[in-house]
Length: 442
Image (cartoon, rainbow, N blue to C red):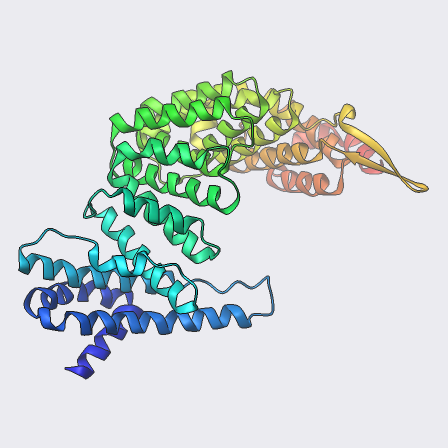
């Protein structure tokens, strides 16, 4: 029995497939052999502690900061699920409701040593999994403890606490408003604010993305967008990711609403926030047919921001255009003639964005429009590659002539455009050989 215990305890931590298969076995042990509960639990915990100790040593010994030692998240998940399975079987046999009391000794601990950190992470992962299954009872004390761990100085503990708190709130949507208020409060800053915002994102995914709770989604969307409209500080990208979850889950409601925010926002910071959310939706390669249909309807409205007065908004809008051409070209095909005039305008050097700074005896030319112009040429390249023949020939030729005389990075992009089009647009190049030659000589 001891050898079997040792073998299976190790297997469930190190082998994810075995851990799934062993779930029923652990439930059976908890249900049929309550006297073995502590031994099996201790065995699983011991193997997790050994795993975490090796990870911590590798992380500590790593002299190269560029090489990050990955956290053993899969092994932590295996250990957490296995312990939960043990107690699930035990509670069923006793006729008791599932309770998290067996995890409280792990969670209600202030981590000081490496072993403490490992145990708290295990308890938090197990709680998060239980919450996602709807097993956790509502507890203000537990929520407060999870929030306290979000303020930990240990990043692994913070990350696990944020995920656990988000899943807990996901089980009780009525608590979302309080979590969001604490995450965006003026006194919430640094790692604490970041952790709480991550918990918000996890909660949105649980309530909206997984739970499809439309009633809660409406109220949550209103709270997040109201904050965005009134915020005096920077708007975190993690909230833009949350808005993307709403749009993907309920596309007929929230994709038009998101597009309206993009087109109607006068503040550049707020507009950038909503464009970022829209780009997150566009980057999803597994969208439903309903999402695609709604995106196709609103793309001209959103991409009108390519002509915005803010250079940052123009750049972000061009990145959105690049994303949709690259991953969903069919959605933009019918709108190319509407969008391309603004796109090709962004391939022109804007002299008002060029500065000359003095660096001692040397004058340096700074082009603040270069990044946006580079994005524009990337869009042109992707357009001729994904939708050959769709671009206006005259506008395309003019951009090529300009780009050949532009910055080195732009010239490289123009060469890629030429490579994609020379076989099908030979007449276009023949007609403009003198112009192209003149640009080359510049």
